[in-house]
Length: 547
Image (cartoon, rainbow, N blue to C red; front, side, top):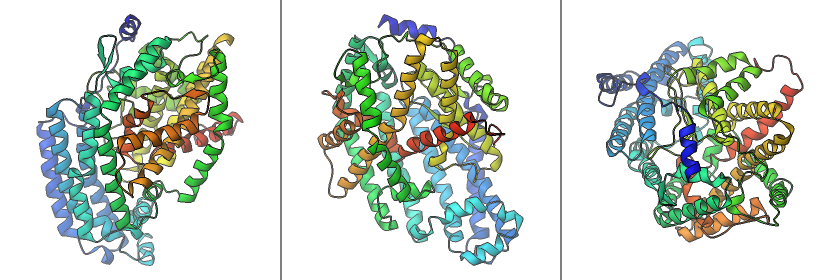
């Protein structure tokens, strides 16, 4: 463990974000005023527009959408601030209380404006098309298209409002319970109590004994908490099934596909294609990796182990910053200049610390502010790739901002494009500058990242699909969830990976299952799309970077 402590000291000065660009503080007059003003504006908006949209001209309807956008952006800013504060420390009860309070107040205020989308969807297609001739409304055509995609699944106004208001005591509450539970967990190893981010970091340590102990600690603690996480999983799956039935979605994944603007059949084709490639991709690679280790089979804690001849290069924060920005700059100086803002300003929270959300994300907040990045940076090459990935999201979100609050959002099927492309740029830069003896380990690392992005995510999609399908017939015990997890993992990893005791509990630490059901196939979508795009770039397509 001394090596681990040394790594922490050598990282350099890691940045933490400053959320004052959103609000000065939890009790600030600015935040209090924003809540009061939003409530007043929402009530006035409903009194002005409810029941009148069908009779509006295009210009009047365009002005109403603009008013709605302004109110909704303030609410989104409030929620972004509360979410980011909570992500920074999920174990502080005062922060948790503030997060829940803001969520409840924003839900109450937004119930006043809920009628707007519902009423827009009742306007006949031909009538709306005539109104769209006016530039004030035609500006919002993409947003209107996406809102109206849900018309066949819309319930009565009273039912929609009930579901909206109850969400804070339903799905949102269960999600918060999961997040705070995971943030509180500690994983014992060699007399230390490690966070989830720290124990996962050790799963790719050079020392096989450390990897094994980390794996056993992870599996044991997750197993001890599997009953609670199983209850959360079952409850949310049942909650989704009830709502899907009322909305007449044919399959559990259908609502996600509709929000992603992609047909069920397209996702089916993606899943089938990846699964058919398991033997030639993951099975083949892990068999090769086992041979590099002088074995026939690798234990699951060796799946992400550095190769025997890997020099385990360490990246301080400053070196990671240079690598990523230089890679972005070689592709496009303009893109690098956008990325540089995140480092020059307090827009990144990098240290791994107790109570902080594990993993990494880029939060777009609102166009009138800027995105923030959360990382748990610990100096490995994979951490550099994570930085490149999240910075891609951040650049995308900055560049999308001028579209405005309602149209800056991106379906998940495209949201991973900039992030995975940023990873590819960074990997290529590292590969080109590496001495010959290091290129094998870099290529192997990239193959493993791609397997994790495509093969493993599709296996996780299969886990979700089977869980949601089986949940329709009754609650699944944690042991059954573990059996499904082991089945899909054996299928995707192949015979060269031996899944030992404790691995059956690893499903319990995947936040995507809780936060955003069926999100995971978007990673495979993004990776496949980026491979195609990068090929076009390599072929010298004119003006590619600008496009």
